[in-house]
Structure formats: structure tokens, C-alpha cells
Image (cartoon, rainbow over all chains, first blue to last red; front, top):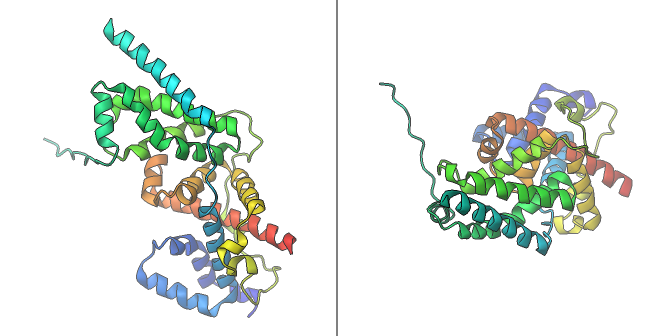
Amino acid sequence: MTNEQHNHQHCLELFKQLSEYIDDELDESVCKEIEQHLKECILCRVCFETLKRSVDICRHTETISMPASLSKRINMLIQDAVAKKKCTTGR
Amino acid sequence: MPNKQIPKKIYDQDSELIKKINSGKQELFESLVLRYEQKLYNFGYRMCGDASDAEDLVQETFLNTFKYLKNFRFETKFKNWLYRVASSICIKKRRKSRHAPDRELSLDEFIPHEDEHMPTAIPGWASLPLDNVLNNELSHIIKEAILSLPKKYRLVIVLRDIEGFSTLETSEILNLTPSNVKVRLHRARLFLREQLKNYFSHDK
């Protein structure tokens, strides 16, 4: 297969829909068509597998731990806001 | 008389707590902070790439949420409302950033080039078990790649692929149509794929 063949309309259509396919947001008939095409076109298959892996890597990024001091600071700010509110409504 | 549709109320794990806070037990707001601060910090860190900016974002989000909690109508999940507040703060931040300038990503720039060599197999980084691929260096690459995305695409990919919101929830949070979310997400993912491809091709 040549790259010219890859730029075929079918490949471009699939290229546009890859994320929806990964997210299972397409109709069953469209999914079947895509699956068939992926079996036949190595360039689209590489495109799909590398995109899917990029999404997987993103989904598995570690959660960045927040500093312990932040919690205290927020609660102090909220306590201040509560006190101010009570002061205003108490007037 | 016009037939006005009454919005459906959504009750979840936060609803009772919010009702109590709004009926005067404001000290309970601390429980809401405890429930979401870590997640919001992670969101802020992914969006800003900097610990101090992420802290500011969490702080500002909770202060605004506290201020406007009385206006919460239970027409969406509280969590989604909270992220809407956080996202608006992110969008409004005009401060100088070392990160990507705002620009449109076009689908065309990601279509495999004609001069690209024809692959014969799936590259190792996409075919090996995920655990064999994940490491600290890759985490850094992903962090930088996300930060180099223009903000409007970064917001969508962080909400969808890192925070785990659905397309519909993301569209609600960002006030976009679901199809707009899908378009931005696809381009953001393709951008990330390019960065990973480059990283792994140099890594050989």
C-alpha cells in the first residue's frame, strides 16, 4: 500500500472519528466499519493504537499531592468569610 | 401561557451537606473543601503547571463557591458546578504564562504526512503493556505536552482524560456544545500523540 492510498477519503473519515471510537461514542454500524478498515490499513491502525495509548497514558498520570498547608489556609479563609457573613447578617 | 420547562433537580452525595450549609451551618463547608481540595489541586496543577498557581486557583475557587453557594439550584451535580467555577477562573487568568499562546489547532496538521515512512508494525510504546511504558520521565513529558496546548484545548483534555468527566459534563462545565468538546478533545489528543511520538522516536 502507498501513502497515496492512505489519504483516501475513508482513511480521513476514520481519522476524524478516532477519539469518538476510543470513547465508544459512535453507532455500532460505524464501529464495525472502522474495525474492518483497521484490519486492512496498517497506517490507520498505527494511528489508532498510538492515539489510544496516548489517551491511556494521560488517564494514568499520577495525581499531584497538594501541600498540607493549603487545607489549613483555605479553612482559615472560609472561617473569616463565615465570621464576616455572620457579622453582616447580625447587623 | 407559555409552557415553561422546570429544570430537573439533581441530588447526589453533596446535596444534603449543601442544604445544611445553606440553612446556616456554614462551618460544614469545611467538609466540602475536604472532599474536593485534592482533586481541584490536581486540576489546577495540570492547568497551570505550577504549585503556587494551583494553590491560588483552589483557594479562589472555594472562596467563590462559598460566596455563591446560596445560588446553587441543584440543577447540576455540585462537583460539576465547582469545576465550572474553577474553569472560569482559569479562563480569566490573563497573567503572563510561559505556556502556549492561544491558537487554533487544525485537524490538517495532524494528518500523517505523505513523506512519513510506511510503518510495518505498531510501535513498541503503543503495543507493550502500559506498565512497561509509564515512568517518571514520561510523566514529565506528558505534563509539559499538556501545558504546551493552547488553553481552550488544555481545559478539555484535562477535564475529560485526567479528571474523568464525560463529554456531556465537560460541555456543561465549559458551556460548550458536546460536539465542540469532541472536536477540541480530538485535536488535543492528536497533539499529545505527536509529542509522544517524537519523544519515543528520539528515545530509541
